[in-house]
Image 1 (cartoon, rainbow, N blue to C red):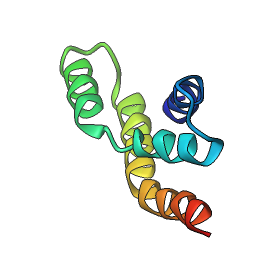
Image 2: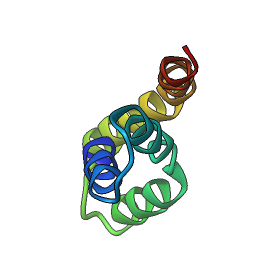
Image 3: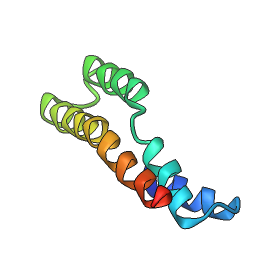
Length: 79
């Protein structure tokens, strides 16, 4: 979702497709806020342990996948 929204925003702002992709991938590793929100929701019993674990796994995957995705997008511009 973040990648798509950032990509579209960059395209509207006049960036090329490859530049917009870099901007979109660059927005992925924003895990700090998400961790605070889901930890608070778990503590307040708004969500259960199962949902907490699923969201945490999603955060970990997005943080770990960002560097290779950015590298690939940057190489597309430089080639």
